[in-house]
Length: 510
Image (cartoon, rainbow, N blue to C red; front, side):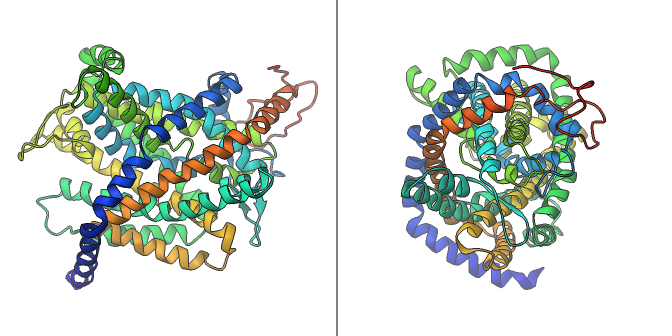
């Protein structure tokens, strides 16, 4: 792969120059965008929807999981491109990324074990926000010239909010969404794959970043150039494997350390309200740091409130927005309450928090998670430790790749809203190229800009969600007022009608 070195070196030199010139300013803007105002607004919106919808994420979670994972699809006459399960898989593919491994490691390293509790809070409240985004995504979706469903905030903001306000909010969301897709959804993910593989195969010089980038490039191209239906098929196959594989590895670590698991849970709850292990500051500021970092990393992981929940939901084959909304909210449950919890508990029970490296710097992010898995399975230098490192490396690689393909669809739909289909193929080609560049170069400036864009996506979406709250409430009430709202739990993976014969209909009143 040496023939690629001149190209990557030139790009890296150019990127380093830009970062040196503008990097500090971009970092300052990012800190403001992802400051307490946005983070706590996201939390507040989730709380409002939870109250307004009477805790739908708790009352209907069991049915939603059955519908998503066992029933999987509705009758064949429903409009859409993907089954419930495929739509959920695309949403999980896009959200279960490096934030579930590296983001959790960073949150606990900075905010202490208590940050995990506040990530749980964002997860449970975020389920109501995700439900609302998905409901609106299906409600206002349209069919493009290719016969595919097209929906998301760029649709429900402009079509659901009358006048120029909705159109401005939709345009801003789409603009920031396209920018974020290249960074947070692409370059950041492929860069983390390279870092994980380099850390695991440090002694094997035959495997180079260029080779990693080439593999990502080919896999990304093969997947996204086939459009949403192919993305749906790949996600449906990849997502169960990657989540089960990673969670199984974490469960083994927790089982081997079961004697301290109870103590670890107590520590999480205690330090959520004391901030005792958070980095720096007096007690009050430590508590606020614990809460803020827990909120920020939790939202970064599950994306509730950013608006992305409406994209995949809009592609689902369904004739009931509420039904797909229930499926979509399980994505946040799986992402945060299951996967994030596994990572966080492994870090806490193995006692690696506070470890410093050979340079005297605090170990954080993905490196901390990797160290925890190694320690939990026997320690560095042992066979078990090596297995632990591979679990994290494979987890990072699959999580990151799934995010790349999921976010390609998000960015594409944002672009399509204002340019039609004319720029879709150029967008896909550039997106595939960026997946390679992110793996072989340190595009810090792009990452910083996309992080800002990622946060700015939330602002128009949150404003729109609050304005559309009455519609979400009305649609929900009308759906559950129907005596036949619940699909019969028979022939789980077969087609079923929404209106079964009266003799066998299961009447469930809300």
